[in-house]
Length: 217
Image (cartoon, rainbow, N blue to C red; front, top):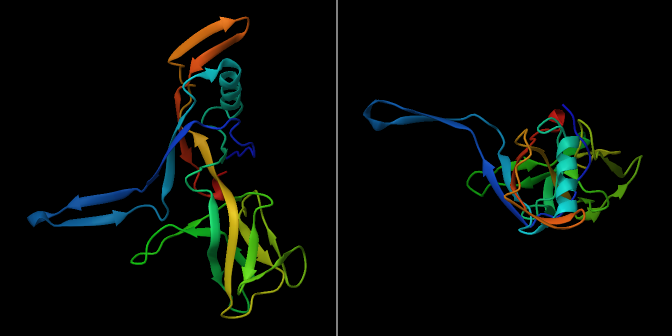
């Protein structure tokens, strides 16, 4: 697997996010059925739409970004403006011995809770709280460290195990790790040449899909 910590180069004019699951439904005699949820986590998919009148230079920049990722070959961070900020999200509860906790956000409801793990927190945006008190970042007792990349990305490690029953929370911004979901860069539906090397492009839609686990980066 390969991950490039290189954010998509331009702001998208439109982004259509959707969560997806994989399930199997088997119909039985009498109209009954058996259902199986094949995934333990949802997977987000996006239809990224470039601006209607997109500068040729920007279009080329996006195409170069696509080529640098080798199509579907390499993943990268995406800012999903519909879901990028976590405020006082539950991190876990201290038990006096556990020192590592994964960043996560609540993605379910009260009747069936679902905690979505987060792997790409944004540098400089996070604060970790122990029973409502901010914890100092650093190495040593009473402090915490947060992995920003790699197989342990999004993992909070405390220098001292939080006290039993202490509620741990986190506030942070984050990116979604994605890859292109195509190997051929989509055609511009319309190219308008103006002069010299300048022009306008009616930007194409670009499908992106989430890379769900840090170990797959």
